[in-house]
Image (tube, rainbow, N blue to C red; front, side, top):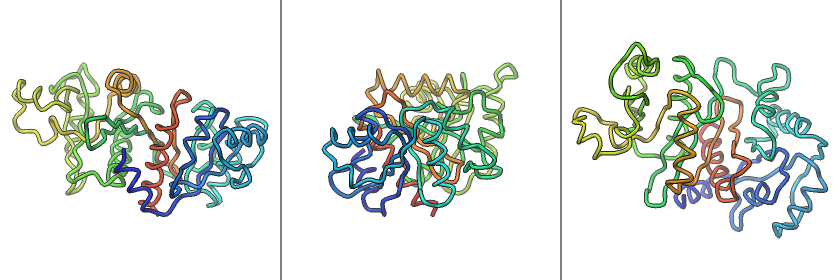
Length: 297
């Protein structure tokens, strides 16, 4: 995490709309002691936001605040500002993801990029590992088909490059095991996705079970000898939202991972944290957004 924060602090900060923050963590995670990673612009109940900034030992007069009576109103104001080029990122506060996505995808005022699917990628940071592992899609696409998975892979690769993960980027297409089976749709998708030309610095392999993707020992025991991804995956593409969500929540609560996540495929990256996330997770997500936004300028 320190490496990601240092990288982000070396880049220009990005003006970010904080949508409907209603608790202290939602505000504290956007503030930094040294060089700002983001420049927060708050949308929500102005009186409450000012009180939260004071509790966070910040001066409310230092931060732009646009009053909104409801979460939907706050989302519309922030999304329109991003649409007009006034913001380079958005951050979900204490509102439901589907509320925000409804505004983001609106044909009249939204910020969806034509012919691109909005997908979610979660970065998992582990205490004893130098590099994060990325997982998609744990929040938006429920049962992604072949086409959606292509966008999940592409967006995750773009984020991995923004995080300056070492090349080649290694992508594991998760399924029950390494066999292509008619009864297992994810294995068929994986078979076709791995033969696409993803570029010189990307290796995509599948179908692959989770243990093979992340454990060299498991790959050796199961005699997976000809894989460049097995045991070294940077990106895990899950079969569906339940599988991805289970992976990230298990790693958070049992593996002590710190999670951070972005929505990509819109005009600007959207920081998508859980309402239960603490300030550290929100801060790391801000760093991800800064790195990604600067990479696509």
